[in-house]
Image 1 (cartoon, rainbow, N blue to C red):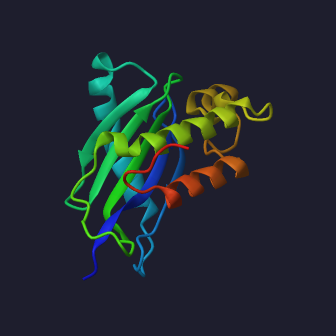
Image 2: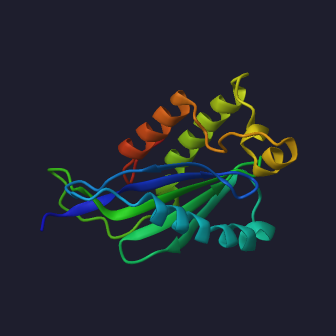
Length: 178
């Protein structure tokens, strides 16, 4: 088997009311089966208690680091914005074939390895919030229940979705923000 390196398996954006706003899945290189969205939705839900447990010791707008390891291959990392929105990146430790010229296999990740990805996600989310046609309250289940609106709590902005896709596909360990 060729050497493999970590890659993003999933990016989740979770609202301040713990409602999923967006989930993007990224297939591992060479795998025929697509990732199961329901399975990753459950994984994202399992990390919400970890955010709550760490909340008293963390400030908002910062890296929550490793939330949990699912198994020897998948690990979840988190970031909390100052608006209470949570970003979760699930890393597949064997998600990408290692590039030519790199002899050493990556044995683990430092929390700082994901900082550029979280900063890029936060920047994309801020751009979304600056859009005058996007109302974050319309994506809240509490708002939908009180106003009897029918709609989606999911983010549908094409620009935001494209940026999340770019972040997930381009991230690699040791990447520098740019």
